[in-house]
Length: 168
Image (cartoon, rainbow, N blue to C red; front, side):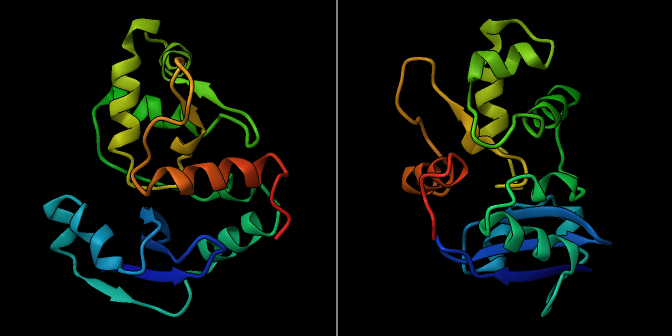
């Protein structure tokens, strides 16, 4: 069974989905079913149950939004993907809060050539566990914010929060 919890945040509800204490999805939506629908069929076959408290994952979210920017780092996550995509996601979790990298830099940090920026972008686009796998910290080398599954305003808010620009 996949357990889901909605955690209120300053930028809207964050749906957390976990299986045996490991996050398998997270995203800025008020409907956990939206995140559940993005899971692989074998995960969806386990069913979804909304619970009151997922424990450490929910605590980490509250700590992150209270200013402990490293709080999400220790929460175990698991998502599907090729070995390259998994490596990109793992390296992405190593990008410190308050900093950003370009897609080319992310590729390079994962042991790929800088020209693999598209693979890095694809890994970000397919990321099921935001902000625990912080794809919001990846920006295009040409400037601007690029895209974000939950909208550029959410990405901008998260980056401002991590840089100390938001005190709420």
